[in-house]
Image (cartoon, rainbow, N blue to C red):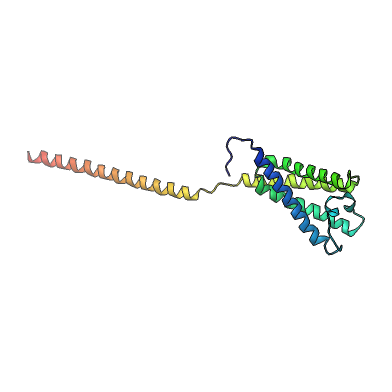
Length: 188
């Protein structure tokens, strides 16, 4: 996608935020079902939004931490395809984690666990920095114009061959005219 003048489109921004949030929670649910699903009998919203489940004291708590960190890595990939701008990666990452904080407060109260704050801080940093790095790599990628280059080269070769033909034809005409004028001078 080519970017010209920056146009502020609030509906696009809201749609990107909603898509990013939904994909983040879908990915988090997938990782939790893989990592935690084998350890507990039933996965509920407690693992998503309650700060007390994110602990380093149990193996299940470590699986919750791993799920959140893996989801932040996947979120960087989502930012690459949804946002596509390196300048906006921190904004969208911070928005995602602020919305997550609000949902956690509504579900289980203010997160008082230092582990919750560290994991979410690291997740925010990973998502923003990795997303920015991926977007910069995409923005700096060379634009493939081989098709246009070959058309230009073929056209250029055709022009050069036409010029060479015209030059040789004019040289032939001058030589022929000079030969005819010298022949006309000998007969007279």
